[in-house]
Length: 455
Image (cartoon, rainbow, N blue to C red; front, side, top):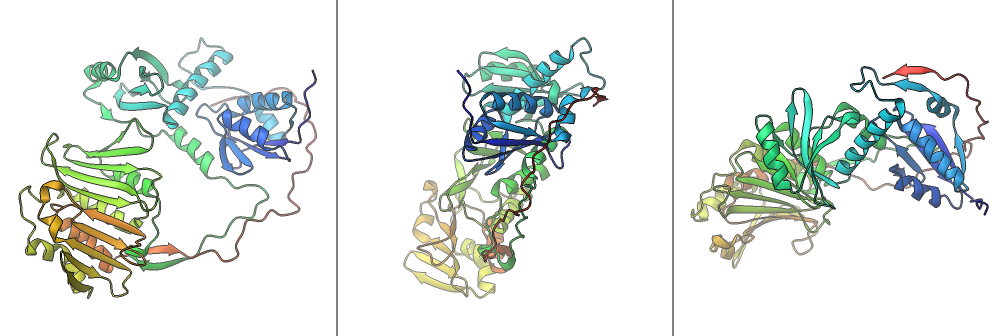
């Protein structure tokens, strides 16, 4: 039975800024067919009609050629640029490869196994519990979420291998700590330079034939009215700057925990939380096994400057300044809200509610005197909001009775005097494809003698 011809064309080319990475541009009325096939083969989607293959073993040209053969077998027209064809035909070897007895095919098999491990970690299929340094080699222990099998990993990049397996995470961690307790650290090891390059290849890419979108205009606004920004980037930057905090992945890829080294201050970050739902939870404890002293939450649309202020305060290490049992009295409330009073925010009392509202009435702080009288329930005693009005806020931050007044005062100071940026709405800007940039037909390339190179 002959293969049906599909109205789909795929242009394969070398990545414009990363030497070994490969790009694919599917076109045609049935372009979705090769698009889905490439995505299933671990090509990364960077635009509606553009995919990138970026690996940690520098074998992208080889796997791009395998993809091209499969696409052609499926009835899809494939075009390979001369530059990429040259890379496909090039014969190269790793310099100082630690397994010199392996053939080129066997080296590629080892590298592909390492790539599979890397992809499983990157996509959350393999949860890394801890890593360590073992005589200048990186080792790690983790568990496959689908099967529950735990593994001991040795090496990094294209040399990472499964060196041992265990029946349970507990068994794996006990064995790992016994050997590597001196250098053991929680979570995965920092990304290597090669892994960074692969990430950049998947994220920093200019689409041929598409005019770049002008950077959106920004305006300076009060901190409470600023854009939310990238919350995950804020947390990652915080953890990178403070080695007394450790990042822990949960069984769900939707949540990340950050825990202080003494285990009494913890951050929970829920990724992709809707704007009006809780995206951050900070909790403090007297001891690692005691009940919470206080808890604070923030929604997904909380502005970046507000979160930055919160994280900076946590980094200062005084999150334990309020002892359990200390009453929330007038002195506490005054200390927490003094920056607002000094800045002229409107102060009102309505029954159980005490409120401070910005001069423009687009932000406020509310204290619930009733909730403050029931501290053991960790009720939302403090509510910080911004938006059209308190009943329809753009974002909210809540805090329980024993939240330190110093933390609340820092947040209040940021509300009263901090600034941030907000993107102005686009006015008529759009992505346009230039009519004269459609790739012309590329003639078949006849391969000459293969070159040799080392990496």
